[in-house]
Amino acid sequence: MNRETLADSPALLHLGSPPKSEAAWPEPPAYRGCLRKLLFNGAPVNMTASARIQGAVGMSGCPSGTLAISKQGKALTQRQANPSVFPLRWH
Image (spheres, rainbow, N blue to C red):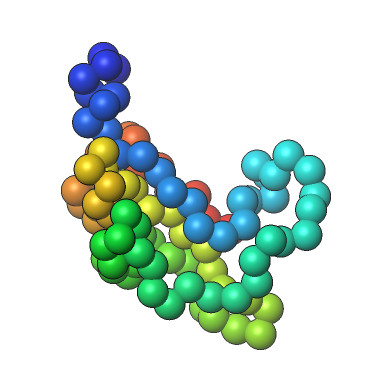
């Protein structure tokens, strides 16, 4: 991947706790609750169109997900994001 391709690639923004396999050390969660409205760089993000969110809201909390963010700061749908740059892992 060259520099231009890397600069045009989306960045990943993970919302929620990291998967246990990726957690460096156990620590209590910094946030408990659900996100209803998300703003990124002042613009609303449609999370249902921008991320594959797995799991249901319940007594134990909310599901986590990953968003692809363009270099302009806009959330991308999975179709807009390059699948090789946007591998989703859920827990």
